[in-house]
Figure (cartoon, rainbow, N blue to C red):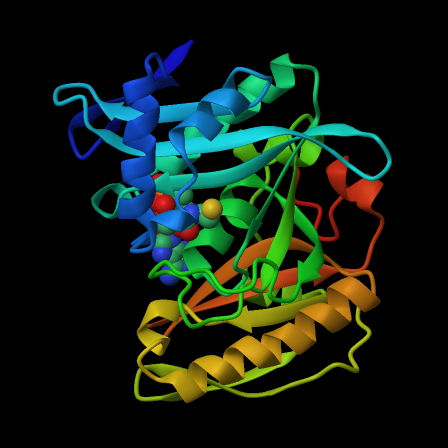
Length: 306
Ligand SMILES: CC(C)(COP(=O)(O)OP(=O)(O)OC[C@H]1O[C@@H](n2cnc3c(N)ncnc32)[C@H](O)[C@@H]1OP(=O)(O)O)[C@@H](O)C(=O)NCCC(=O)NCCS
């Protein structure tokens, strides 16, 4: 089983790995994708082999002409506290020059097919909720939902994407056989606009103003009770890294927001919207306080499944 993608005119083959050397190529890609300087942070090639041969999955994306590995996904079998078997997707990575061109999406579709063929219906992973590209990828493109937020999940991580920041994480649930996901993937589920959801009564719980091109989280509200809520996140977290006090305000402010609305008040992240205003891209999570079974069945508050 393999699939091909064309990225910037280059053919990339997505497939399972064949030799121990190919698993070692993944460890080098880990270093490149996350900017890892401390090798104790790399998942070793023998762990990848062990998981891949015991019901997990490791996929590589190889440039056909050069054989170079430009992306990968790695996950293993896992079990919920209720004894439900699922696939835990621990790492998805695309090297910088291939990012935001759809390769990650191809890897995840392949992973979904494999897991569905195993008879499972759930893939889970965690990600930093403040990373807009990941939010768009996970929630906006793949159709994951989020019900849980973790504070400093891994403790300190010493790669360049995470260094110096607490590892707050969303738990992504990708219900790979659900109508929600299939209609998202086949394009029947449009993303509503900001105006659409505000007309439906959504409250924005974050107050943001711009200092030059830098977004500042001025305030946030924990006392809203509408069925739909919007929480804004910064468009470019990496730019904020050189303005540490602003980054900290976002990190700790949104920690309160997600802890309150997801962990304590049973809201679910159901969509991720962008609006373009005055040259700025503004990004928002849409939270809904509704029935998850209905949501997975494609019954959404804005009725967009055609
Ligand atoms: C996360 C990752 C695997 C996704 O793979 P990818 O090939 O870049 O993903 P895709 O191109 O399919 O989707 C990314 C989307 O984010 C969008 N995006 C990029 N920057 C964005 C921003 N600032 N705001 C909103 N969306 C943004 C892209 O335009 C694209 O959406 P589109 O298809 O509608 O244009 C990859 O970017 C990556 O390796 N990142 C670094 C490592 C990482 O964070 N891994 C995941 C955690 S384990």
